[in-house]
Image (cartoon, rainbow, N blue to C red):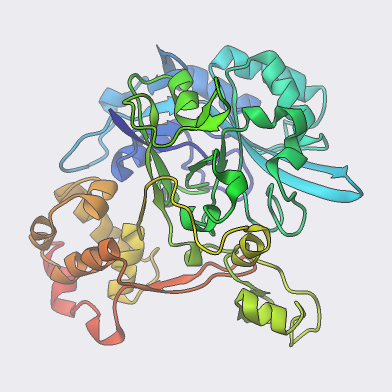
Length: 437
């Protein structure tokens, strides 16, 4: 059975996050988006653990369900999801190694609540896990991994948004050049990396060192609307943390080689759901303060120096991949699909910000009258979407499915800008209203 999973996100206990990111909000948000498996986020935070104990009950094998689900109406037409929770968190590590300051963000997925409580007791002895939902530890990430696996070998550890410049395993500002350089003898337990919003599978497939590493995608959401902007679709024989781990592990333990196809019917990643990487905040090089952006070739020509302020540019993901790649062309090693979030398609059609009342009302109406967001974006027949009453939106969704869009690349913390419609294709005033009444 296939499960759409978003397992890297944050709760209201992290900095700069929405107050709606609690267990109830995540359950509602997952139903609206069409997510089957949703991470809790921030399991290192004590107050959130208490909320989990109040709101969740175990369904076995490391997954939990929302206790009050029968009292929740998420107003979703079509397929009704009953999302299950997995205990997840992101931990930041800032430490010195090899004469360089390293900054790493790591996804940690847990086999159960008791294991989480023991991990929190151990981390509390090392650093401050009480001040923020995403704690910052002055601990080498390899030492942290050993500590985690000493508690339970069933924890899953995945380098988060692996390519972003400032806080990632391959980041241009503070990362490493290989997984082995970072994790040493523990590298054999690192089965996957998270590609992040600014890279996609083909970019990662240019590195032979990642041939036996699974690629996963998640939203890293700090608000409910951003849930599911990226996701991983697992094919599992049975829902369990152990089967998730098996799906991630591409290595053949008997021969230490890559499974060629993973088509044996066992647990596997079916495909990932991807942002267009140009839309990510760190795809190209540049300086946001100087309003300057360029591609890797231009960066090389200007020797990495901003022509406006004469300081070094922030080197983005595309450039860093180019630096570490040992292939000109990607060697495909899995399946993936691109999406543009539905709110962004609507906003572009209306030529408005996605947070405006009109965009939100239209989005809610589409979810209520048609289906959850993933089904609308990926599966719902276009004729059914046209019946909603705004034909231009069906056209926009068709273009997204075909990849017929334009993206101005993001850089230095600035998101890229997606264009689905041309200026003369904006939704008419008449069509803006009629579907809502």
